[in-house]
Length: 489
Image 1 (cartoon, one colour):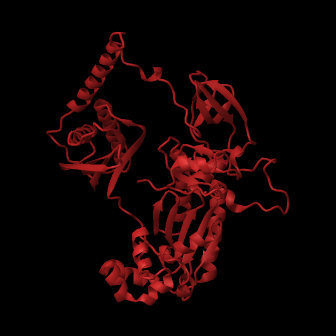
Image 2 (image 1 turned 90 degrees about the vertical axis):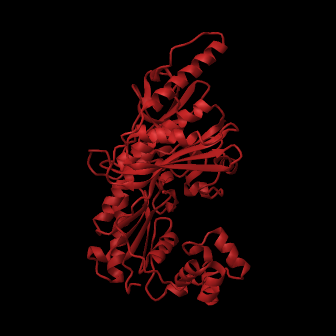
């Protein structure tokens, strides 16, 4: 434990939702929910305005719609979130060489390693300046916690939300933690909390009073001893600059269960390609391929195969994933598929026996299925549909550009029409227009920076300004809850 609060924890406020509000002036101050928008979607982040209605992360989107049907339900835009995250992480690296990212919107920083004097006034000043710099660079807000240990810094940042800063002075830990629920401590999930509840332990103070021996009896040696130390406010974990990923994976949940074996196979191959893209983007290779299959009844199966050596060859990974799929019965219907690679390495070892026939077989099977379906319908074989001939899908929240009206975002679509609101992060709330989904003048766009001069923008650095209709009057409470987070797997 450090004698000064030189460990900083930053947590951006409702990151995904806040970024969408900053990008879309018409949504500022209104409930916004980001996540899966289909019937099986899950809430990723809810703005503070949406949380008033009881909406929380990991809640089924269908339940969120019942709680707040008038909220804006948007598809995530990870390109934008990564741009903003990179800008925030750059500010953190300017403070110290020891920065430990936990997700796109959350990180620990060792201020002592950055030369900040181990004094409360000095670290508080750094934290306040960081919050100002983040707002200037991104237009968003973040909450900062400062303490002598990582656990306490994270608790402090949670207490600071939204858009605040809390310092926990060394020596005050037990007094602060005592009345808090035991779920506050890291590693205490629903099962552990229930075990402690049955033993009459509900708060951190009661956890400390129970003693190490009792906690070890209830939870086992490693978990019990670790929990006792944390209940006393002890946490000697260092800030680790590089957190090495153990695996890279992708998965998709389908709105309708997949029952066609050819379709399931093609989806697995597509996921394998996406996984390879992530693998190469990280500069890694892997030797173990894993597939995940969740059936119609929510039962989940995983199968894995270890290769002769680490690889990032898409043909090898696709073929391994296809072989693993043959070991799984999917006839009852599949609601989720995933492909991952573990056993990561920084080099590749070519598999001389890798076959590339999988792709050709899949294409031939898909063509055969399409031809059979066409013949059954009485139309005879038809040529495969070109990519540009397929209907475009316009998901709510995604960026678009119109030849005449410029940049905007999809507000909704259906029955052959798409509704677009034309506005930019630095404009007044924009006008809504409706087009045919195949309108040639409308095309997908790229995220605009949230502030002029921000990420991906070459203009002068100038904070985004709220339109006059949304700007607070002098003395008016701005409700710092307008602002808000990702972890990618």
